[in-house]
Length: 91
Image (cartoon, rainbow, N blue to C red):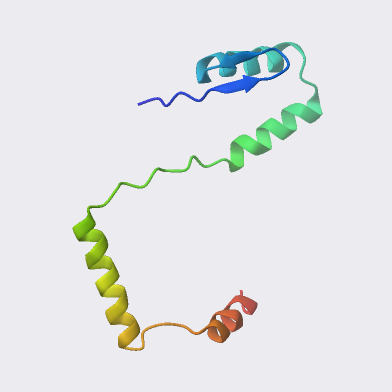
């Protein structure tokens, strides 16, 4: 399923859908882009990861996960702020 992304350009007063934007970018790359721009686009394409939209959970599942988290805390299964800071320094 393709999501539509709309962009509003104040200067031109237009709204562009994803497909229109794709065509516009391709035309720019084809006709005007220099090496610096192409390297930038290439780097972005290689590092870009589409964010996945997490599935919604039910209120029952939400409450179950909270209860499990509270039980972990009660059992002492957590890190203190100081422990986390120490772990972060070792990364």
